[in-house]
Amino acid sequence: MGGVEDDEPTSKRMKLSFEELRGLSNSSTLKESIVGSPRDLMARPLHSEGGEEVLGSKGIIKKVEFVRIIAKALYSLGYIKSAAHLEEESGIALHSSVVNVFMQQILEGDWDESVITLRNIGLTNEMTIKSACFLILEQKFFEFLDEEKVMDALKTLRAEISPLCINHSRVHKLSLFLVSPSRCFSVQSPKQATLRPRSRSKLLEELQKLLPPTVMIPERRLEHLVEQALVLQRDACMFHNSLDKEMSLYTDHQCARDQIPSSALQILQAHANEIWSLQFSQNGKYLASSSNDCSAIIWEVDANGISFKHKLSGHLKPISSVSWGPDDHQLLTCGVEEVVRRWDVFSGECLHVYEKAGLGLVSCGWSPDGKSIFSGVNDKSISMWELDGKEVECWKGQRTLKISDLEITSDGKQIISICKETAISLLDREAKVERFIEEDQTITSFSLSGDNRFLLVNLLNQEIHLWDIEGDLKLVSKYKGHKRTRFIIRSCFGGLKQAFIASGSEDSLVYIWHRGTGELVEALPGHSGAVNCVSWNPANPHMLASASDDRTIRIWGLNNLSAKRKDTRSNCIHHCNGSS
Image (cartoon, rainbow, N blue to C red; front, side, top):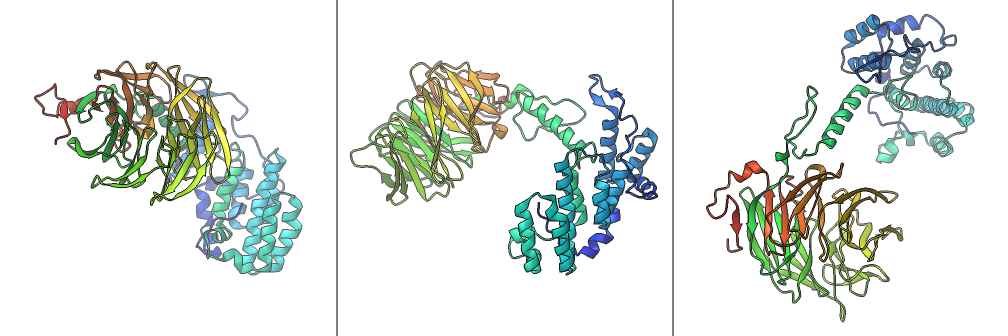
C-alpha cells in the first residue's frame, strides 16, 4: 500500500490540488457543500437513485448510472462546463455532497476531517473503511516526515495507524522510517523510491479504486466499457485476423472470410520422403522442415514467398523434430532415437552433435537464453547440455516417452513433456514441483502457446484439447472434425493474437478452428496424403504452412494474393523444388 513516487515537491502538489479536483467533480457543487460542517453531512440518495428508470431496448441500462458515467467521462476529457450542465439539466449529480467534501479534504491535506467524513459516506464494509483510513493516515505520516516533523509522524503511527490493526507488515516498515526518515525519500532503488509520499491526487486515485463504484465512479469507466464491447465483438468475430482491420463505434464489427489463409500460394518440393516436422522461426523469416528422408531443410521467407536456403544432412535416421534457437540464428534437429544436431542457420554448417552412449535422443528444445539445450532420451529421462556438449543435468524417472514433444517455457522454469501415455508433466526446475495434465485418451502430441499460458493437446480419439496451464490446470476448450487413426498429427496456435487453431489430418485436409468459439472455420484441400503437421508464421497472421506424406509443403495465404503471383505451371501456385 506504499505511496507512488512523485518528483514534484509537496508545496507544488498542494498548489495544483484544486485544479486537479475539477477533473473529478463539479466545482459548483463543491462550493455548496463547503457551507455546512462535514461532521453533520450524511450521504444523500442521488436523484432517481431509488427508481428503476432504464434505457435501451433490453431494459438493462439504469438511467442514473448511465448519466453519471457520461458526466464522469466529460470531466475526464476536460469538458468541465458540459459535464456541469449535464448534472444540472438531468438533476443527477456525479457525486453526493459528502463525497465532494471528502475529495476536497484529501487534496487540501485536511487528514483528520477527511477520516471523519469518510465514515459519513455511507460505507457498510468495515474493512474497506479501515483500509481507506490506512491510506489517508499513511499519507499524513509521510508528509510529516517530508516536513521533518518526526514526532508528529510518530504520534500518527502510534495513535492513529496502529490502532486500525491491519497491514501489520506495512506498519512495521513505517516504523523503520522513524529511525532513519531519509530512507523514505531515497531514490537508490525502485523499491525504496516507491516509499516516497504520493501526490494527493494519486492518493485520491488509490481511494477511488478502494471505495465502491456507487460512491466514486472509477476513472475512465466509459472508455473501459466501450473497449470491452469492442474486444468482445472482435473476439467473437470468426474471421478477425488483421491488424489493418479498423474497429469503429459506428457499426458492429465483422470481418469477411478472406482474412483466413486458405489459398495455396506455393508448393515446396525438396524432400524425398514423408515430411514429419515443420516450424517457422520466431521472427518469421525462416521455415524449417524435417523428413523421413533423414534430412532437414531451411527455407527463407521474403516478400516474394519462400525459397530454398540449406539442406541439412548428417542424420542416419529420420528426423522427428526441429527447434529454433531464441535468436533464430541456430537450429536443432533430432533423429528418431538417435542424436541431436545443432546447425548454423546462415551457413548450414553442423556446429555440434549431442549424444549419449548406448542411448538414443527423442526430442529437443532450447533454454530461453540460448546457452543450453534439452533433450528427451529413450530411457525416459530428460538431459540438459551446455552448447559445447557437456551434460550439466539429468532428470531421471518417467519423464518422457520414446516419441515425444518437449517444450521449455520462456522463463526457463518449466520443462513440459509427455511422461505417460495419458499424462503430460510440467516440471518446475526451480521449485522442484511437478504438475500433471491427465487425459482419458492417449496423448499423441502437444504445442505450447506463444504466451506460455496454454497447451494444445492432440489425442488418439481425434480430439484436440486446449488447457490453461497458468495457475491451476484447467481444460478450457475442445476441437473436433479432423481425422487421426494411425499417425502422429500435430496442431498449432496461430493467426493474429493466436486466435486460431490449425491442425493436420489423415484425410489430407488442413483444419482451422476459431480458438475462442471452437467453431470450424476452414478445411483446406490440396494435399494428396496425410497432413502430419502445420505451422503458422508468428510474424505474419496470413501465412500458414502444412507438411504431408505426399512429400510437399503447402504455403497458404489470402485469396487476394494468389492473383498477384505469376506462374504458368499450376493455377497461380508457385512450385519450389529446392534447386532455386
